[in-house]
Length: 232
Ligand SMILES: Nc1ncnc2c1ncn2[C@@H]1O[C@H](COP(=O)(O)OP(=O)(O)OP(=O)(O)O)[C@@H](O)[C@H]1O
Ligand SMILES: O=P(O)(O)OC[C@H]1O[C@H](OP(=O)(O)OP(=O)(O)O)[C@H](O)[C@@H]1O
Image (cartoon, rainbow, N blue to C red; front, side, top):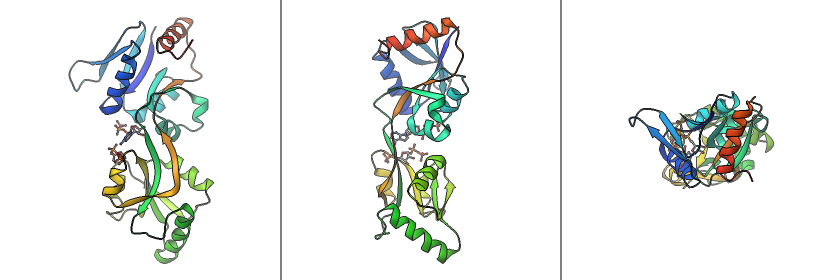
C-alpha cells in the first residue's frame, strides 16, 4: 500500500519542489542516471514518487493514478473542467510564479485595453475577411476570460511553445501566454493589455478528490500532510 505523489520531472519546478519538501524533512530525489525517470522518497514510509511532465499532472490527479501532485495552478485550471470538484489545493509553494496575460504588438499604439482589442478585432475582420488570431496553449482560460469581458470577434490558434514568436511569424496578431520576468515579451516587442491579467499562477500542492483510499493509505497520506505541516 502506497500513496503516490506526482512531481515535475525536470527543471526549476522539480528542483524547487525537492527543496520545499526537504525543508520539511521529506527527501525526494531522482535515482539512476540523469535520463532515467525514477525517484525515491526518504523521511516517511509508504510514499512513492512519480516523476511526470508538469502538464500531465492535472490529468493523472483527476484519474486517481496519483494521490497528490505538484504543478502550476494555470495547468490545473486549463486542463480540468470543474477543477475544484476534482482536486483540492493544499498549499501554494511560493515558486513557479507566472501570470497568464494577453499581449499585442507594441506598435499598436491605440490598443491598451480589451475594449480596444475588441474594436481592432471587428475592424480586422472587416478588412481581412477572417478573425484576429490569438496564439495560446491556454484555450479554456482565454476563451472564458474573453467571453466574460465581451470580446467575441477573434479566433484562438494553438501554440504549444515559443508563442511570442507567432506574431513575427505572421501566424497570429496577439498572444495569450504566461510571463514571469517579462523579458520574453519585451524581446518580442509585445505589450500586455492593461486589463488582461487572466490568471496569477504559482506551483501548488494538490490532492486528488473522490478517490477511494484504504484506511492504511489514508493514514499514510495524513502522516505525510502532518509532516509537511499542512495538518494540525
Ligand atoms: N518563465 C517561467 N517562470 C516561472 N514559471 C513558469 C515559467 N514558465 C512556465 N512556468 C510555470 O511552470 C509550469 C510548467 O510550465 P510548462 O508546461 O511550460 O513546463 P515544461 O517544463 O515545458 O513542462 P512539460 O514537461 O509539460 O513540457 C506552469 O505552471 C507554468 O506556469
Ligand atoms: O516572462 P519571462 O520570464 O520571459 O518568461 C516567459 C516565458 O517562459 C515560458 O516559456 P518556456 O521557457 O517555458 O518555453 P515555451 O515557450 O516552450 O513555453 C513562457 O511560455 C514564456 O515564453
